[in-house]
Amino acid sequence: MSIVVSPVAEGADALDAADLSEFGYTQQLRRGLGSYASFAAGFSFVSILTTVFQLFSFGYSFGGPAFFWTWPLVFAGQFLVALCFAELAARYPISGCVYQWSRRMSTGLVGHFAGWTMLIGQVVSVSAAAIALQVVLPSVWSGFQLFGGDPALTTKSGATNAVLLGTILIALTTVVSALGVKLTALINSIGVTCELIGVAALVVLLFAHAKRGPSVVTQTAGVAGHGTYVWPFLVSALMAAYVMYGFDSAGELSEETRSPRKTAPRAIIKALAVSGAGGAALLLAALMAAPSLTDGQLATAGLPYVVTSRLGDGLGRAVLVDVAIAICVCTLAIQTAASRLTYSMARDGVLPGAPRLAKVSRRTGTPVLPTVLIGVAAIAILGVNVGQAQLFTAITSVAVVIVYLAYLLVTLPMLVQRRRGLEPAGPGQFTLGRWGLPINALAVCYGLFMAINMAWPRQAVYDPAGGHWYLQFFALLFLAGVAVLGYAAYLLANRPVTAATEPAEVADAAEATA
Image (cartoon, rainbow, N blue to C red; front, top):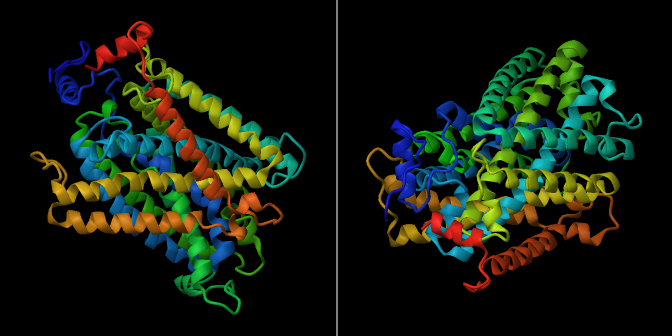
């Protein structure tokens, strides 16, 4: 295969462009990410300040203080997945990593479904991250509550205000993401630095205000009643599962990263490792500092309640401002990753409207149309929360399930391919060596178990108010809908096109990637 180097690439970037061309792609995106920016992409997607603040009450309400132990268990499982991904990032440094890795380990159809499910999960995740602003901003200043007086997401006023704040945020992240990777990387890096400092400071402050010892994590607060604690524990594990994904974003931005074969694998592992350690410390500190374990506030108001009640209004609000920054950066990171996945799939012609979606702006060096479409779709999903808060919760919960399925569509084909003989690692590339097979097998088992656990039709999770049977089985219904739409998109994108009617842009795109 001939090597085509971007005419603007020089020095090391030219070598990276030449490396990319060996996979059949020309360098169109601009390489501007170093090791810290690559790490920031994955860490800001996970964003423990965003998700732990948003979901602490969920985990506590089902598992009590002992739900803490779901965190290290989920981390261990996801770390196995991250190790597999690090191997693939070293071998295939291509944007749209989950899609690219899956199709190269299996078939085009399997790869399409991996990319499609990951894309749907990312779009919904943009909405879920953006709506988290409602959890913190009204607590910082009442002026952020523009509709009514009750900021709770389950109320009409809170839901409407959440949609407004989320829409403004997504509009801003759409503009920033479309303007170029350097601006995105700069904002991500600054935001991640603020988040790291904020997590460290918050953990220290909460430990300094501790009311009880670390043995609090052995208490269940009677959530099991007279039954076994296993079932409440499994449900509470969904909190950690909802948090720890997206660490593969460093792989999504491989074509914009310098020396991605070395940088991306390290960034993937580091992003998850730092998130895991920081999140565990934050959970422990919060449980030790909480004013009460039995007054019901931890199961409803969650972590913001702990922060404001223990640190006071002034310091507590300063921490919440840092959380708001993390939410903004998290939303930007997810949207950027989703746009690169869309671009990568469109470049291969596996999405409807592929020629237009695969275009990269010469001025900004970004795929503008995918970025805008993802922003519009995320805002549309936000609108569901106004009249159907339970439905919005169900959608965002199931989004994580399909991300886990997308991960499975990478690790499972990788395990099969490993048995046949995985492509050997190049000099200096990350490899698991003889540990690859057991780690890969355990990653598949973990992913399958957690996907089933999250999708299980529990009324307490998907339909807590009762009376909506479709919400209880929403995970299964949503997965079926995603599969049908995904296959329809595959057939539409791969429909026969005659030479006489073939659009010029299709021919140009095919020629460019030949």
